[in-house]
Length: 549
Image 1 (spheres, one colour):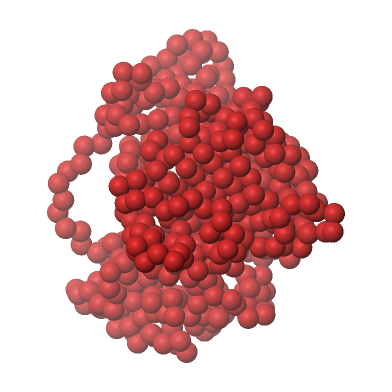
Image 2: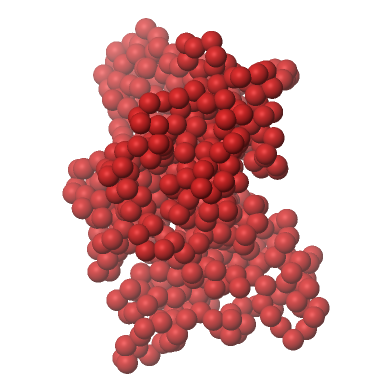
């Protein structure tokens, strides 16, 4: 996708030192919410670990496709002759320079030396994980990337125990977020490989569940006791109408059920108890109406577990493309259906990974689902739980989008469960929202616009979209946006600007500059009113960097 997004209180230069200080305090306020999730490719960086990462301009020949081609031509980038080795902590620690860099991720040791010049975050960022365990740093920045596929040709071997203090040896270079909480070892039959000892912790109560059936359906009742639970917190993935994974997001934890159901199902519905006690009903419609199930089904590995949200593995759905709608010459709406029986609503401010395999390497990119901005068309901003709609720009020289653009109706597209940490409750306090978008960076804004302007007609919240594109033919949903301006009774405004407009264009010309921002943005609020203003920025990395500086 190539977009980076951030939501923040944007500092604007003014002639007043007091105002400058206010903006500085606003920019560092704890009330700032990630939109979309921090460290996502959809989010730009200010350079701090808490705000994501910096991207560097890679030289010609060092893009993702170039890395794939290098791996195809040179399958032994690890330099081991194709033989997997056992690597001790001491040996790993010696490979800690740009000319000789190894890292350990989830027990596997990779020679990352040949990847240094291909790393989008730059060599220095990559070398933070050299000679030590880079698991947690990788998960913080690149959780959406399949490292085993990306670095498959760089695999040296597995970390092994040379002494009992191996964990400390590997972590000793790490500071702060570099200290991994993940096991460094991959279990095998070898006695030399073992799990890192875990400290004793208090037992955690796993929410219980029960089930019952009627003639038409089977219902699982989960007694989560999580009173804030909503439908969007429940994700159900069903393969082959029986193999079922249920995940319930409960704050920083996830309840997981894994079952091979006794019989096939055709549809899933989720209901949350109106009493606010955290009870959840997952209703499976029977494929064979009237047949009595002798049991709920067979428990599979991972069943009835309570996971940390940031440590769970990402699950994927094999979806089918059901429609493809023209938007512009290079941008389309793709509507995909989840596998039969699956259920997932996607909260505003969250995104998904679209993934495919190219030259034996799994490539994934983050995309934010969209909804209709037609006030006359009913739409739930979280979707209907069964379909997902994307607006995607196709780049002829892209790594992933040529595959997406070539899909025919009925063909399969792999998408992940949703990711993100934007708190929807943030919108309850907001009185003014400024959205600054470049190109398809507009897509993460769509659900917020729908919610604030169409779904909340009595709201007094004002929304202004500063929307930059190159030419008239690049403009996305111009007519729906202009119609929404007329519908909103002045609560919604759009500032279109084109950097390469034709002579016939009567609107704003040029880029969204500091002068434009100073004119279009409201006066900075006082610290006590900081939560009343929300500023969202999304677009190509150079665009977002320009907004932040």
